[in-house]
Image (cartoon, rainbow, N blue to C red; front, side, top):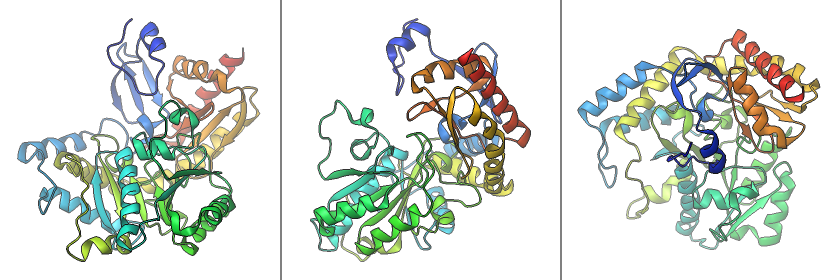
Length: 412
């Protein structure tokens, strides 16, 4: 079956040969394919459907907004009223009080926005040579130019040449590697360090004990901006807090977000910018010539407002903390499975089942589908587990059981 749709991150030869996995509808933590088969959604789409599928409340809010004002330019002094309202609401939950909110169209936009702003900030502070931006091995920061240059996943960078000068990669789990880089190149050339508090697409890696606080202090000591990439972990996925930056007391200079902002119902992203970073641009006479046509889209803002209403009304940030415990308990027995080398869990509604043989990942994903689970592999053969916050304890254990059954099939 030849596919006209070119899928992202796909072997299109295989997709064309086998046909796409076409999803028809979703409700709660379940999805159905076009043949009517039901699946547990183990990944909340792509980390984003925090409130679950089928929330007509969000669609209704978007419809009302589109019927009133679909969108309008956010450049200059113009903005849709709903967008201004959303910015104020986000400012109230931002990891750093008084933060400004710059809207984008998604996570990759947010990363590029933060990379540009970091360099421009130092330019405005009279330090134009501070241009180097730093990422980590295993890290994924989207697929725009800056995010690809920052990627710690070599296959994501291969074949493009040097997309952006002044980008570097350090070890993901060793804070001293950042210090070593700073000492080699000089703090006067390093603009920002980008950090996923929990590495997501690179395979779900939790931060080593003390790592985040140590590397945050290194950034403070050497005037390196700390950018928390919370495209995955933001808006409750970390459990117990709106953002991982709060749970780990990071006080970041910038926070990049997307996914959970609207629970994926409409594309939208945002960058939270601490007051001291915004100050040079708010003092008058300084233009930041950057923005997106659909940044702060009115319909997306309505979706975000309705999404936040649901999260707050149903206490879903707390539910994500409960899922953290459920996943840790339910997945633990799989650590002894012959097809598994490690279970990574214990921080938020996010976990990974690391396959002993990464090459078996495609077969494992197929086995999951055969057992009624929609899943995917991240990093080097890690089955991503990142359910919606509405998944019950019973459903978490059902998910773990089905994963185990699929792995049994894999090794039989």
